[in-house]
Length: 261
Image (cartoon, rainbow, N blue to C red):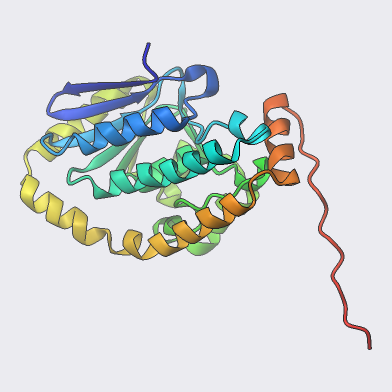
């Protein structure tokens, strides 16, 4: 079974992440498959991204942080940026059908999508500082415009989990439906989109990307900082703790250096 299933149906390109054994966390190949599918969807009415096996997406695969290969990890980081850029550059509306946990980079996928519907059992949240990373591809910049700065910092820094109803109240998603109604509701949204002008939807989307475009410098700067921090003690400890299902033991802050009086 391929890691990403791409289907053309009901006027939309449906992209399903299919690595339930790791909660649909993506590696470089999966991210490239999503990019290719999104970029090939210009002749569709819409794009729908969803997950399989009860999870939406757990972000980048953490097994690559445990004992990182610098070149491979650099490629994963930069390909992750290309993936969210492809979603925003797609001329068609991109809808996240969040069927389960959207964690870390998976939550940032929701942020990148134009629209989002969540199953009632879905959960949302960032994982960065908990696993020895930082959510620089949407959560530390664009998400503040979607849900407010204080709430975005709460998600990015505290690494808490939020229910679908809480995500709706925050403004992370547009609608919450019963779990077994998610795909049918996504199809209804696609049908509604099909009644609209593709030309003027593209203009509307391009114009609405103003804040996303302004966030690009923050994303590339943050990505550069993550690349420079590859192999740090906190990165490796966070990944190992996650994979071993235990609390991480991060390096405590260093004492502040004081100038002699």
